[in-house]
Image 1 (cartoon, rainbow, N blue to C red):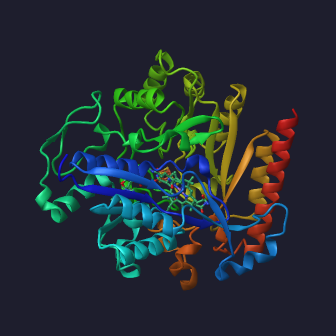
Image 2 (image 1 turned 90 degrees about the vertical axis):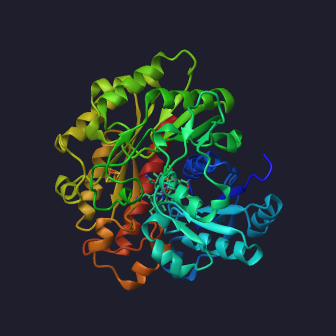
Length: 466
Ligand code: B12
Ligand code: SF4
C-alpha cells in the first residue's frame, strides 16, 4: 500500500542473573501490533530477546551485597545482559525506517534498559517513540520525568489507549472505518474509538515460530481472559486490565490455536491468563472443545502463570488432563492460611482444599509445581520451611520467589519502605533480595533461597533417577 505508515515494536534487552526463555513470547507487543494493523499500519516486531543471547557483565555496584554468595553452589553464578546490543538494534531501526517506534515497558526492574534504549534511539532518530506495558501503565508520570526523550506513554491495554493516541498524533492518516482482517477466518472490525480485545488475535504472523520453543516443540503464549475481580495486596495487574473479568468466545480462541498449529507448527499453548479457570462453565466448555477437535492432536496446554487451586476440582482436573494439560502450576503464596487471608488471596473453600487438590492432581499423574513467595510482611522462616517440607513429602516441586514490589499494588502503597529501595526500580525484582522484614533479614532470605534451591535440585535428581 503506497504511503502506508510503518511501526517498529521492540521487546528490549534486560539485565539480571537469569531469565526464563520459555516464557518470552512477546504477547503484549503482538496485541499492540494488531491494533496498529487495524488502523492501516505496517508493523515489524523486533524481539531483542529471541533468539536469546547473553553476555556476562559485572555485578552492578548497588548489588554488591550479593557478591559473597556468587560462589555458593546453589546461588546465581553471574550477572548478564540478555538481548541484542544497542548497535544492532539501532541498525535495524535505521534499515526499517519506521514512522513510529514502540517499546514494551513491563517491568520496573528492567526499566533501566528501556531508558537506555529510548535515549539511544532518540540520539539517532527523530521518530516518534512510545512505550506501553505494565510498568508504563503504573507509573506514567514518573517515567515522563525519568526519560523525557520518550514522546508518549500509553497507559492500559493497547486496544483501548492506542487508537486515541493515533487519532491525536497521526490525524492525516485518518481512521479506517472498516478494515479487512488479515485472515479470512477473522471477522471484519469496526475501528472506532477503541477495539474489543475479545474480537482480535495477537499478530502471531509477525514472529518467527522456530524462535519460540520448549524442548523440541514450538510454543506460543495466548490470553483467553482478562481482568481480575480479586484484590491480592501484592498484585497490580488491575492497573492494566481492570477488575472486570471477561473471557473470549471459545470459537475465536480455537481458531487462533488452529492457526498457530497449522502455520507455526505450535504444539504447546501457554495461557498467560491471570484467571484461566475462574469461569468454571467457560473453562469446561473450552476443554471439551479442544478435546474433541480432530485437528489439535498431540498438543500440550500450559498455564505457566498459574491456576487458582480454589477454582479446580476433580472434574476439571480430569477434563484438563484429557485436553492436554500435563503440568500444573499452582501458586500457594504462603502455607499460612491467616497470612493468605491478610493478603486477600481468593480462597472460598478453606485452606485444606489446596491439599485436596494436590492429592487429586497427583492421582491423575500431573507434574506439579507449587509457587511460594518468600519474605512477605508477617511471614516467618518456620512457616516457609514447614510448608516446603510438607510439599516435598508430597513429592511436589517447590518454586520460591523472593518477595518484590509490584508498583501500584496495595502493599506498595501501604508498606513502609526505605526511600532508597522505593525509588530504585532496579530493586523491584526477586533477585535483588531488597525487602527485609521484621521477621526475615536479607541473610535469612538468602539462606532460605539456597536451602529451597538445594532441596529442589535433589528432588530433580531423584525424579530423573526414578
Ligand atoms: C509472562 C510474564 C513474564 C515473562 C516474560 C514476558 C515477556 N514477554 O517479557 C517472564 C516469566 C520471563 C516474566 C518474568 C518476570 N516478571 Co513477569 N509477567 C508476566 C505476566 C504473567 C504476563 C505478561 C503478559 O503477557 N500479559 C498479557 C499481555 C497481553 O498483556 P501486557 O503485556 O500487559 O500487554 C498489554 C498492555 O500492557 C499494552 N502494552 C504492552 N506492551 C506495549 C507496548 C506498546 C508500545 C504499547 C502502546 C502498549 C503495550 O497493550 C497490551 C495489550 O493489551 C505479567 C502479569 C500480567 N498479567 O500481565 C507479569 C509481570 C509483567 N511480571 C512482573 C515481574 C516483576 C517479573 C519479574 C521481574 C519478577 C521477578 N522474579 O523478579 C520476572 C523477571 C524474572 C526473570 N529474570 O526473568 C510484573 C511487573 C510489575 C512491574 N511493573 O514491575 C508483572 C506485571 C506481574 C506482577 N504483577 O507482579 N514475566
Ligand atoms: S494475584 Fe490475585 S489480584 Fe492479582 S491477578 Fe492473581 S488473583 Fe487477581
